[in-house]
Image 1: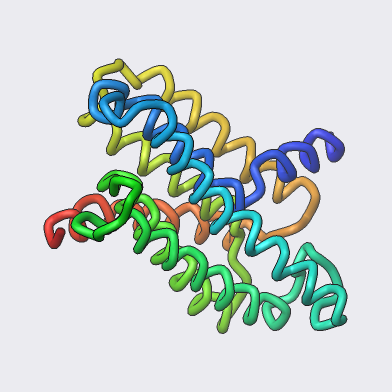
Image 2: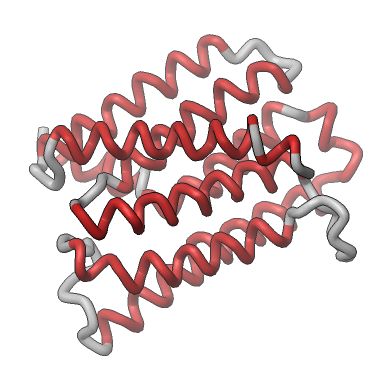
Length: 211
């Protein structure tokens, strides 16, 4: 069971959430974004993957090399401080790349903008919470995906009710895996779910009204 829990934790690492979320949004809205063509959509995914996964991972490897952190797992709240700041910077950069009305060669994408705004807000919220106690970043990402799927139900031309049920089950499995390998307490897991869901809800419900 613990082996399965570690595999789930690896496959659904928090840094992979933006690329999963972006792919999900594009898949759910073929009529909305199909006009941009596969090249543009692939460019969007490359931007998200580079800024939210590749750059943060390189940063973490550099910190480990310089012995600024004991392990890449970031097991203590203190070790998470600098990685949180760096990741938030990269996430904000990605958010700006998709901001509507930004004059860029690659077209902007408002849904990806809202998603990345929610992801950035999640990182900042987790940073504040981390000052007082740990929070599960895995369930933070899972809670975000639940909120995104709920939001896409009203945008997508597909019936996402079965998909939403699948994401709920998967999110539960992610939380259970973190508890099984004793990476977090129940409170830290629940706090992650609530924080991730709330931040994405704010992004799609409130931030969307400002842009």
